Image 1 (tube, rainbow, N blue to C red):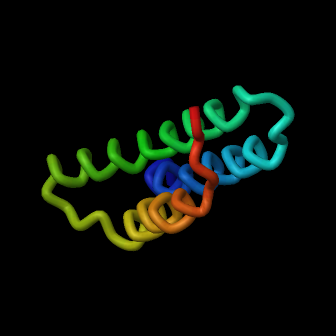
Image 2: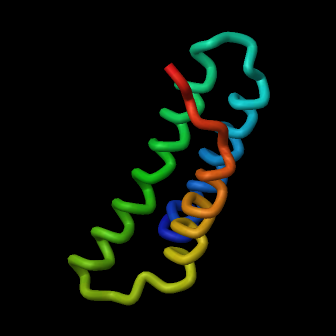
Length: 81
């Protein structure tokens, strides 16, 4: 059960980053949103490393975790400056 939740964790990070981008109340907010988005990669990369060490197939969870980060990340505005 913990493994499934770790694969799904990037959805929460992407959602929080999206909310922070939309808040846009200060010039620091987009930088914080990009940091939150980047931290969303930690559980996915950790689980990919764990499955590689155990020589297991990561399964559909890896597709979901990596997919949401790869597809929604480019939709966020770039931080200039």
